[in-house]
Length: 456
Image 1 (spheres, rainbow, N blue to C red):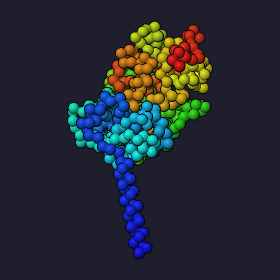
Image 2 (image 1 turned 90 degrees about the vertical axis):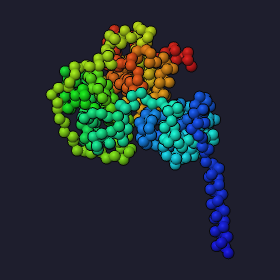
Image 3 (image 1 turned 90 degrees about the horizontal axis):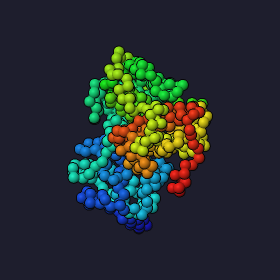
Image 4 (image 1 turned 60 degrees about the horizontal axis):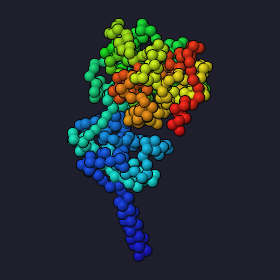
């Protein structure tokens, strides 16, 4: 009798648990209703898929890639991060908002919905039919990163390596480059199979940190086996650079990869692909790395006159002309302490301050981090967020925007963010603060600009 009573109590307890669980489950929403709510300012739509799927890659066989118009990206992977709620808040998603969550897998949508409920977000609905309904209906709007095919997921690269084919790839030759700054050990301790080691010093001068001469760039690319028609996939390793180290850039390999991308774009490589998130994204997928060195096969001729795209790099003369124009912006992609002159940002640059008239493009915490352009996993930050932050300071695609930083690395990443969005009037001031500050005749400013004091 006691045993039966215990069993009955257990059944009642389990029934109550299931009932409560059902009560707490988020309500569903139909595609038709969601489409009618797209302009509702009180509704926040959250895409829990990867940034790659959000940007436009069709990773689950859906007929149309991209994200529901107006959606914000809070990837499922990030729900395990200790900083998850900070990511949510950074996108202005508040507990009083009505949320709609969608993604590829129902169980993951439910898990993220539960995470939101635990964080004090009571108004949650879920949409399970993105693949079979929304992506199949041309009347349901999708947005995507204009040039998302140049920002590739690890899955895409793995398929390319394994089969020689991949979506949105129509070429017969590709070369993978593991980029580093005078740190060959970074490559030796593990790289993507088939990748060549590329030292950024082979493409930029360690004396000026500007791009090397056309002759030197040509020689480097030909030695790597790269022609203007080669598909080049670039990535690096982020190893938590310390600005107090003698060479912090040696630990910022993925930033170096994007600098490399700019220089070979300038040279004339037509099909450049950047691995979104760098080596970390490859390892996060569970793919193996190797210590086996890849042999390079040099080519005789690059196949184009270098530079094929000279306008993407400007020098100090053009930078000064931009400062005089009302329709052009010179943008400082540096940290706030650098911008107001508290620090130069580098152990080899003495002068502190900013170029008068430059717009603050806020990279993040210091010269070797790009928190305001990247997610925590180093993938490109939601491009709508970047664009919105730029618009607040007058950085818009109708103007010519020239980015600069200390020596060109961070400016290159900002350039590529704009380029991926489809912006055309963009360039990098190659000399940056290093070149500007080395000429005592060039003016500079320190302190908080009056505009920022007025805004506050």
